Image (cartoon, rainbow, N blue to C red; front, side):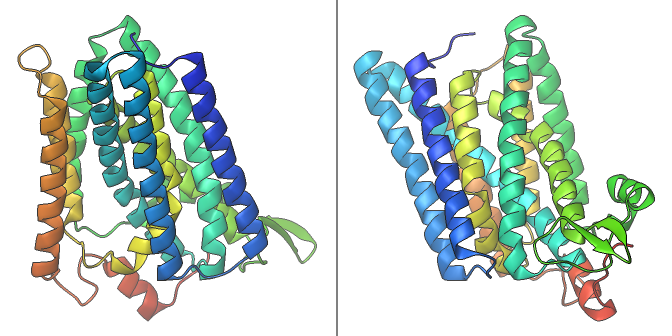
Length: 336
């Protein structure tokens, strides 16, 4: 499989990610547990987006000198498209994170640490799955058709599920945890384990982190094939994924208060996934240009966001998010 990734590029990228995580980790420790304001979330979101496109610009400049403008233009466009697709799909992660935090009544000041742990797990998981995906494609090129069929099916399934109430009570992972783990009834600061009545128990915070890890796996199964529809270059696939994930925490706090305004966004994501699946299935018939994929994704997401602001959610004041309204009225419960 042809890749622009040289030892130098891989080393520089790995060093950047390590530095970014260390800065984030030490900033988290220094700030301590606190509620993230909208201003702080917006600032960090802008920083991560700016850093991502700065990397894209640097990559374009570097490749232009090393391999020519044609390669530089193609790879920069692939990175930008892959980054946007992964960023868009991450919105669905955010809505699920919000559901988990609401259901388990996670205090606002603890959410930042939970998301940090989830991001670390997602980075490792994505790297492993991308390497496996690249290896499979290099040896079995027909697997791209399986990816395409899976994405088309996922898009259709997401369309029908959009707006429906998530049923966390019947979640198999949560039911398994309740049967096999002793779970404390209350939080104990930011601890993952505590002692209640002389018995060591997992705190609700530990349960939430485990569920977020499972969510990462589920969404990675969707997003990894999607990025391989844009490019099969492992370097572009991994870098665009990682940059999208690094800004996930700030984007969560930015969008958490606006999720009801964008109640139609899931339909847009479903259309994008179905489009990418069709693109992969048509590889031998017609290769849709990367620029068209970028334009289609941008227009689809923009249209669904505008329509969300113009069309009121159906049903109750909770609209497309009745689980949130129910939690407020009935009282949010901790697992026992």
